[in-house]
Length: 529
Image 1 (cartoon, rainbow, N blue to C red):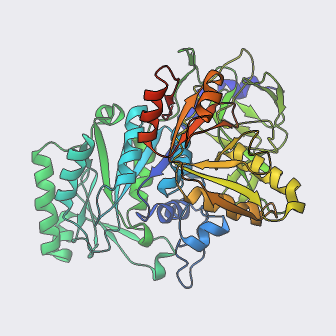
Image 2: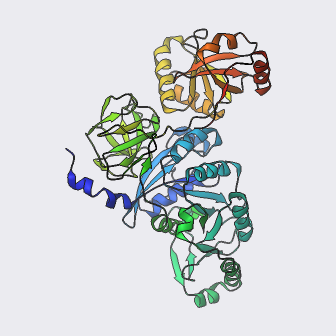
Image 3: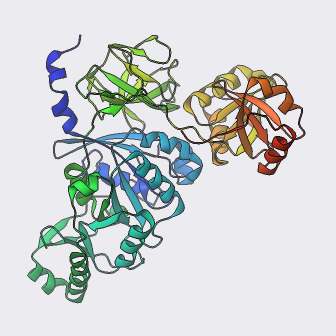
């Protein structure tokens, strides 16, 4: 069923694609920006608001009821948007630091990132952590200074902070007219024109933009325009101009000023993604070779998600297409198991909404329904076996025993724990001593426990109770040392769902004392791969 014409078209289709994620600290406005991008690409008719502002609907990307209630993103979402004949695959990420593992996996599936910073707070801790991942992976970054409609810091001061803390040279594409809190528009540094924004009621619709010559801008805005020009001239003097080669090489970051909640500056970001962000390219495999874009189909699973369709309780595997053409109904192989996998039910997820996907190209994201045999990190392929590098796993720091509140619902309990394990919501640890009815949940952050508890009750009808343990540190070990470590006070060895043995300790000092008592013991630190 493979179409030769479709294969020949792969390089052309790949050049039309941009796969990107938005990284930020919580509350920088990431979900609001996602909604604004959907609005400006006409994917939705009216923008939602993460805080449930009166008269404004909920955001598309935050579909889980817990997200809507708490006003935070705790899941990944995939949105496909079209702008200027370019297909934008936006992979939204959890905003909370407790879900870093999920975010890091998403960053493995993108080719560019938008770093969103708060005009008043600048670069915050979670933003810097995610920036470091992007830099390590060589992902070029476009920076957006958000919330310029609110009081904030001096723009030149923010540019200095970006340069000092990231090592990137900021090259603003736009410059604000009006101080933070008095956002009137921007100077387009490429043309010298003034782009003036007009407020709309509640910021729910596209904000009108008007362009004026410098002379018209001076007459209209007076001192605010002159001040903006003076600051922009300082950028000119330091050579802070965009250079595409330096941007792609990770030495510079284009900067835009915006207000996502008012839909100011969103078109400029879309233009930058189309014109500057890289399209998909060949990807390296575990053996160091690269898979050409027009080679046989291949993709990798970067996210598992259940509970998106409450009527069917299905399980969706999100795959990033790396090479070739995906055609719905094709039978592919899973590199980990060697087993075939039929792709009859392939969908594009737009938040919670679904549409059938018949064809997809490199850079696209496809949701495979009822993918019970697939795991995060799996490679799917046609033709010769290919396998892409594994996705990150993190060292857990929080541990809790989980039990079903109602023993009569053990079947639902077991099914729910298996599902959360497969999705990577939490890591699940077991031992013969604790038994199957009381596994240990291991998490990077405590909010992962809240999500697990909420979903066990709402999706699987198996309410649970958690008993938090005093362990804070985990080390990998081997079967040889299992019994000896279990014999040490305050130490417990459990088996993770992937077969890895983890020794749990109350703190790092206890690790050191065990090493003194057992000098030859195998204790391997867990680090993000």
